[in-house]
Length: 110
Image (cartoon, rainbow, N blue to C red; front, top):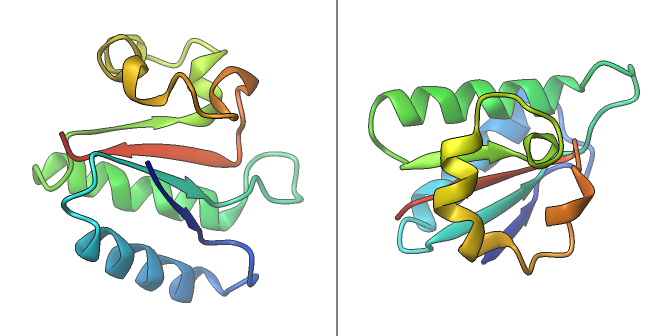
């Protein structure tokens, strides 16, 4: 699993999205990518997290990724049950898997 910590440098949303898109392009051969985008300090999800997931939804719609799973979907029903069942073997050993971490998202290219 390849990891991308998009929020460590506290970028502007536009820069974070550009960096995410570039990272995903060069990581096409990776089966699983863990994006660390953080949760945000607002208490309802950060702008970077929300923008990342909008980008991932668009990539999924255009068949550029196979699936994505928000970290919190592991512990909270959100409609990702089928993807979790399918991809669990690839992520179950990750330290964030059982935490329901709102600050990460798993992306699948397989």
